[in-house]
Length: 429
Image (cartoon, rainbow, N blue to C red; front, side, top):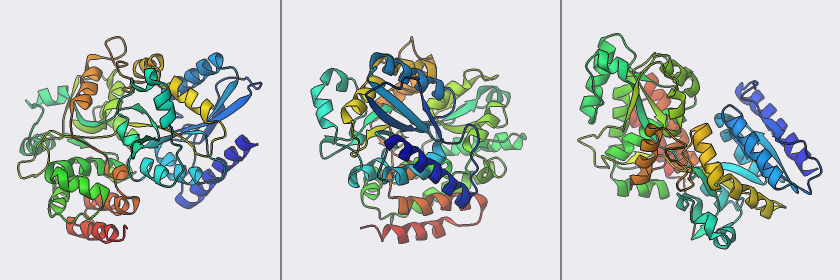
């Protein structure tokens, strides 16, 4: 009955979203509820909500669940999925309902992870960490899932963002990976002068553009100020306006109508050599394995007039929580511990390309030299700033992200955007 109610709720929410936002589910994007096995005799059923209905993730999760159920015949795992943008629309509503899933994916930060903790939705799982040190001491990036010394989640993988570039195009025009903002702009101008699209951006969902802003803020605004504004939003520092001006400076170098293109579509354009550079997440590296061109990466360039970090990166770990309303928390945690075991961590890296949070899972047997390099980069950085769309209060991040869309289209100025951001920040208690 619990599972039936949960499935009906998801169907109802999908129809609401379709009606309200013009969303039309398709084969890949729609919510998908499956069990990896046909075992109906299990004593316990746990529901599992995540955001990967597409390949190669779909096969990965089906295989992991099948193996878990084989080793634990008394537990049945029912998974429900929705792609990234749908998931963001649904998860807060679903988790606030009477029959939330036992295990659910979450981002960290104010908009999701912190909210689930503060709203008493996520279960305190500290005892499981304490009781199984052999498991917990092999999990990195735990802190973003903690509050007041207590554990509320399990990180699945670490993530950041870098510029990927087409080395063939760069070599054609005698270009090298830029290190400073001036070199970056010069590189973009050279590409544009030669008829190339310099930067590929899919900003139909505005989180993509907000990641640019996160990186520029990190360069322009002092770390102390940024961290304070992530905790108690004020955003009064004039460097925030200057950061938006940097985004405005990039606008002529993006592809046509970036606000009408989705991120996955933009990535496919980049893979088909429609642009020289694209800002992508580190776990997207496997998409380039079969690219017809040589590629490389470079970090977001330093900015001379900035007061922030020249070497920091943006990103955050992502993972899972257990619902406080779960009737089977032990089974839920047994599944999560299996999911983040050494064999499954290595499988995640080798078959999906996600840098597992399991220490030692990213190695020469599971990852390419470039993937190891990107994973080590994240591990070595002392300053990693969470994305704006997740790290700050939702009421503040929305006008910020929407503002970046309008800035790129030329319909709003940096000053106008910050006026709206400030107005919302003042309302936060």
